[in-house]
Each structure stands twice: as structure tokens, then as C-alpha cells.
Length: 165
Image 1 (spheres, rainbow, N blue to C red):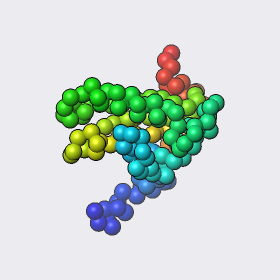
Image 2: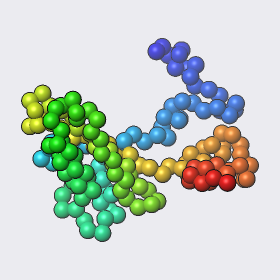
Image 3: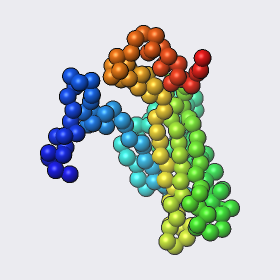
């Protein structure tokens, strides 16, 4: 993509449109954890660290290590399911989801299996951590962008919560 193409994507804010980079900056990426099947942490990005700290801070019983208890439980479930699958092709459909944290800022955990070339010994578990519940921010930006009235804003808030009528 050329510089001229990039400049064409930048729109005038006076026309109630937004620069695409502004929209992208509002989106926080997922936290990423890569673990071995024996729960050794092989990789973690910065967002993963932040979300794990958030999960750990809300637990009544603090985790002894870096990994929150919910992540360990999910990995144990994946390993149990993994032992039940006979072929690596079956692992493609293996995904475990958990919603953890409190109701104000829940975190969605999604666990996947990455098969290794030499069997179970090289198999990895990929865990994506995503903050859920950014409704307030979405409603705020929608209100600015579309210039909603107070009533329209209330309706959008209710819809974002999943309510109808």
C-alpha cells in the first residue's frame, strides 16, 4: 500500500467520519499464552500479562504461580480431551472456552491445541485472553459518531446489554 493510499484512508473529522487508525487504536488485542502440555509457560505477550494480573487480583484465593487457577483448570480440561482424541486431525476441532473474572470486567479464555510434529511431547496449548464488556466505550463512540439523542443513546445501551423492548 502506498503513502497516497494510506492518506486516502484518513478522513476528515468535520464530516463525522474517523481516521481508521483512531478506530484501530481503540481496540486492544488479545492476551496470548503458549504453554506446553505439562503447563510450562513458553510465551506470553504484554496484554496476556495484564489480563492475568487482572484475573489474579479478583481471586479470593491467590494463585501460587503466574497462571491463574482458571487457566490451569482449562488446560487440564484440554489435556483430558486431548488424551481422548486419537488422531491429530481430531485436535483441529478442539476448543475450550471459559468466562472468568467479575461482572464489570470479565475475561474470555479460549484454549486451542497446536499439534506438534513428534506427537504429544511437542503439542502446545494456545490460550487467548480477551477482555469482554467494552459496551460503555462503544456506546460513547456511537453517540458521538451518529449524534444520538438521549433517548436513542438509552436504547443503544439497552441493546448492548442484550435487552429488548
